[in-house]
Length: 221
Image 1: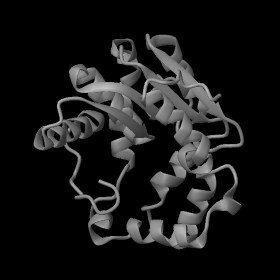
Image 2: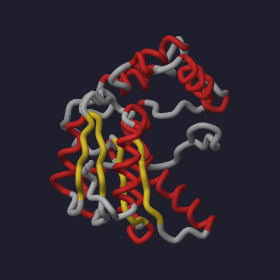
Image 3: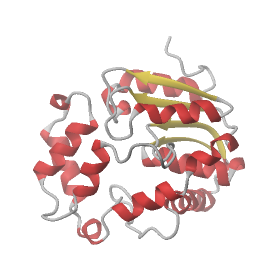
Image 4: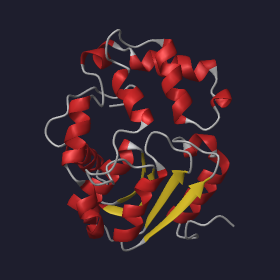
């Protein structure tokens, strides 16, 4: 998990594992059905949840979700390479994190030292170092889940948001979803990397609130 959530080793197919954890969380809180916004890995988990438990999901918002390209597509992107190498010898460092975050966003000058320090401290917690996230074995397992094969089974109204200049999960990943999902719309932010919700926060929030509230089709007015 991210932040201060529990760090639990992934068992089995990663997207299914995380989707099951979300479903169990909903069960524990007595939530029968919910709209979902999934960012990056969370977007893939949102799709898996909608595939495995369609009655539990309402509208879906996916921001740069991974796992949508078939295995013959060029892999891995620049940002994923940096992410996977972050915990490899000689190990995490502030400089390595800065290099990764610089690839995450379109304009690195907007990233403050305070934000970098916060992200760095979270990345070197003992429980994180003991079980680093998104290692190469996890990445291979995600690809083997072949999420893209089941996109046509997601009837939920879906808004996909992408940064045109995303170097972590490139924008062309969106076209498989656009081709296969029955009720999907796409909004692309120019001058934007992998953090659309941060890089274009005001427009992103207006777009998503309108879509989830049923008052918008995902197009900015």
